[in-house]
Length: 290
Ligand code: GUN
Image 1 (cartoon, rainbow, N blue to C red):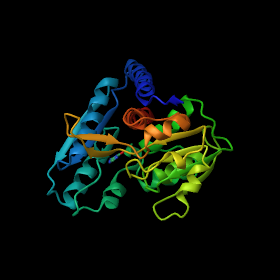
Image 2 (cartoon, rainbow, N blue to C red; image 1 turned 180 degrees about the vertical axis):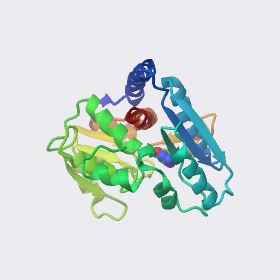
Image 3 (tube, rainbow, N blue to C red; image 1 turned 30 degrees about the horizontal axis):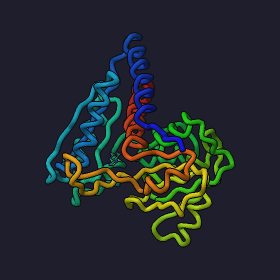
Image 4 (cartoon, protein in one colour; image 1 turned 90 degrees about the horizontal axis):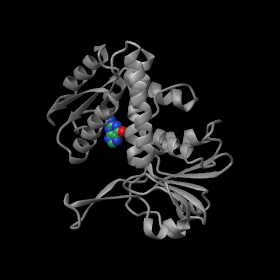
């Protein structure tokens, strides 16, 4: 069994981005600039956004954090998005999800200029990605594809099973893995909470991607000997063994599944760090396009 070290690969990618930023600046351009919009005080969202801001510093980007109260109206948030669209000093921005109930997330995403949509959530970017045109690809699928590439994991002709159908992970990943590309060229099955015979389908996978959001859902009997398992789960479970009072738990029962695997990602330290660098890559791309 070999552990897929997302932390190590993410550090390598960050160094590559840092060098590109230095070249960009040396050629007379300004630093890439990412803005993040944070609404409310959700613990997870605050942590993720702070990480994104710190990542920017590490690679030499400018960053701007815009914080709003939970009570913000949809109109006010749309106005903030509009201002960011118009602001030439900002290359790309994200609106951290989830948003409070009074706000229609789809409306906010659709208001983002696709050229600045470094999350790759806008329907224009999703559509371009779907037909293999250059686009901003959302961070988690993009980070997973990069891990598969850098570990030279064969996908051509392989049986890939994607467990989960979310718009930001399962659905785009299913498409990317099936595209005429390397990595890609796979035979992909997407399954979800309503699928029948989940265990049998998973057990046929050469590459199993667990993105269902159910802690330790994937057990040893669902994994073929020699499979590659990518764990996208990030559920915070209460724990009395950590300072924070919670423990990040993946969708895979790591202890019993890992001995059967050729490759497996740990949680934390697998997909998570790659997701963060994928956002940086998109922001660099947005800046280079200018
Ligand atoms: N919430 C959870 N993941 C993400 C992400 O990748 N982008 C944004 N904007 N919100 C999220």
